[in-house]
Image (cartoon, rainbow, N blue to C red; front, top):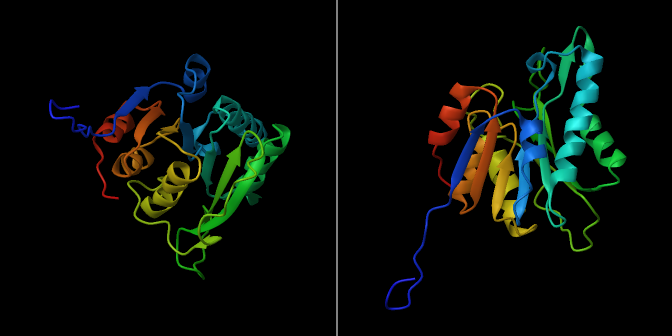
Length: 222
């Protein structure tokens, strides 16, 4: 506050940690007003076979939901994949984690990564975006359409599109009262940059030094 009583506006904070996500979560309590917005790694990014990765994925999602403060929300952005002819439904895995945690699914959106009608041979041309709360929220409201026609620009091939980031971070801010957005698998920092652009503090975690460097410097507009 200035001498004449005016409040000083400070820029939102951003912190990026070079660490393993689940270890970092176990070592750090959730800040008050924290929500999670993240996209967890698929099997090509984890040194496990398909069965082992499925169990890791569900366990990691459960860990994130348990880590939240009581008023928090976790929003997962996940694209289905095909592995040796097998379709892997990541939306199902997120829902399974919510069920095993007895958590509340607030909404489930489909986000188009490619125009409808696109034939995708590897990753699906759409993503699931699913909001989960540790407990039922009787005041929860739907936020916008069930299908988003465009995920928006991405900072890298596996990144969360900027428009999807905006939808998720606005919901966290406006409906869950978030003051800080945490992305424990932050990649190059799209979620963090959008959260800052919307006036929220942001914390990111990633194993790769180069991705952490990019996540610290990325700037986008709201």
